[in-house]
Length: 171
Image (cartoon, helix red, strand yellow):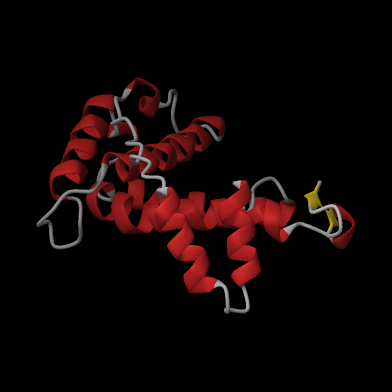
């Protein structure tokens, strides 16, 4: 069954892949979370060989309409698309290891992830934010981010050699 494969074979293999360096720990946790939260509960009793593209499409539809715990609301298309990525990886591994002949997730139709609408701050919003955070310990960092468009990782990776305070320049 899907449950047996996930719990006894696939998830332990992810742990080994992390130790071996072929996937990152965060990726393994991502797969494990989605497998345990959504896949095993709804598809666990299905035979691995019975997991067809039609069954996956039905599964994705269930998640979209009543996928939250308690079944009262659906998951977002983005979350269901992430579940599909997890199912696809799981079945890809099952094919590589000889459990399946083909990956039925290749033929399934997951929903398209939704992109959140960007709502940039107005100049007055930015000014109010900078004024409200000026006296905070991280105030200079918030100002730098707001005024330059640097990403968090870029700002956190700055070194003193990147900054010329006299010329008011950042490289």
